[in-house]
Image (cartoon, rainbow, N blue to C red; front, side, top):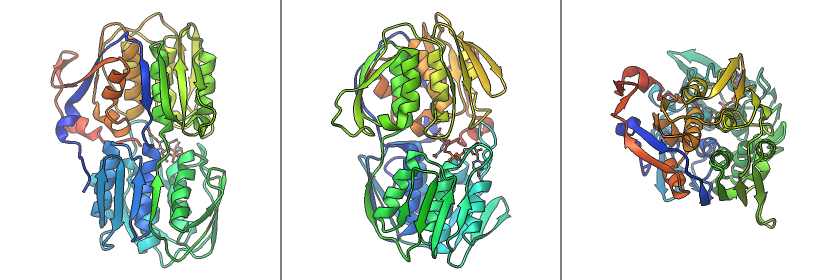
Length: 461
Ligand code: EPU
C-alpha cells in the first residue's frame, strides 16, 4: 500500500506568502519525480522485487503506486524507500480515472505490452498547456510489432513477442521523453536488436536505462540521441537510487536568487543544469560547487545573489538546453531585473498560464505567440493568484517570495505533485510562508471545488 494519499481536502489548500524575507541556510534536493514515474512503471517488466531509494514524497508518486496496485503489484513506501513486486498479471487496464489525474500514467504502456502481450491504457487528453500527443509512443511500439487501436477512449495494444527494429522518435518539437522511456522499456524484452534514433537525451532516460541494466537488460547509449537495446528473455529484480530532481534544484536556486539570498543546496545535479546555471550567471547570480571532489551530478553548491539582476534572453529546448519545466520560474525572477528579457518556449508554445497571474502582481509582460518580453519592474505587489499547472504555480510562489505584502497562491495540489512539502522547505530557509485552508475569499468570491476546478486536477507531467 502507498503510505500516503492526498485527500480531497488538500485540493482546497493555498499558500500564504509574505514576501521580502531573504532565503539563507541549507537544503537537500529530493529524488526526481520525472525520473521516478517511468522507473516505477518499469517494475512491470519483472515479477521479482524492485527497491527504490530516494523516492520523493509527492502526490504523483502516490498516484503511480495506486496505478501499479491496480495492475497487480504490491507496493510499500517507507521514509524515502519503495518496494514493488508484480504478483498478478490479469489486470492490464490503466483506467481513465487514474490517467486523467496523472498524464504520466502512459508510461506503463511499453512495460505492460512487452511483459503481458496486451494492454489497455486510457488515452491521455490535452493538458492545461496545450495538446500533448502520444503519436510517437504508438509509432515506436508499432515498429516493435504491436497492433494498436483505439476503443472507447482507450489505447488497446497487443503483440505476440515484440521484435527489434530501428525507430526514429523525432517529432515537430524534438524527441519525446516518455515516448523514449516507453519504447526503450518495451524493447528490453523484444527479440533481437532495437535502435532508437533521435531518442530523448534527458538524464531521466539515462537513469531509467541504469535501472533496466541492473534488472538484466542490455541497453547502451542512453543519454545520447541513439540508444541500442539488445532484447533478453526475462528481467529480474534490482535496487536503484533515484537521481536528484534537476527541476526542483533549479527552482530552489531561482527562489534563492529572487530573495537576494545565500543558500547551500546539497545533492544538486550541477552537470544536468548547465543551461540554467549559465543563464543565472548572466543574470548576476553566483552558483559554485563548494567541494570539487563531489560527483558533479549530485554535489553541494552555494547560490548567492547580492546585486542588481541583469535581463537575459533564452529559449527552452530539449536537454541539454534550457528546460521548459523551469521557464515559468525564471520568468518570475526576470520580473525583477533591470531591463527587458526575452523568453521563447520551443517545447510547449502555449505554456504561459503564469503570464496573466504574474501580471496581476504588477509584472510587465508582453506575449507574442510563443515569446514573452519581460520588462523588469522595481517591485511586484502581493495578490491572490492561482495557476493550473505545477511549474506555473511554482513561479507564483517565487514571485510571492519577493513581492511586497501578502500573496495567496491557490490550488496548492499542483505543487504537491512535484515539490515535497514546498512550504516547509522554504520556511526552513526563512521564508514567511504557510499552508492555509483555501476556503477563504479570493477576488471577492469564495473558492469552492466545482466540476471545472476538479477537472483542472488532471495534470501536466
Ligand atoms: N510530442 C509529440 N508526440 C508525442 C510525444 C510528444 O509531438 O508522441 C511533443 C510534445 O507535444 C512536446 C514535445 O514533443 O511538444 C516534448 O514532449 P515529451 O513527450 O518529451 O513530454 P513528456 O515526456 O510527456 C516530460 C515531462 C514533462 C516535461 C517534458 C519535456 C515527465 C513525467 N514529464 O513529458 O514534465 O515538460 O517531458 O521536457 O517526465 C513537469 O514536470 O512539470 C512536466 C510537465
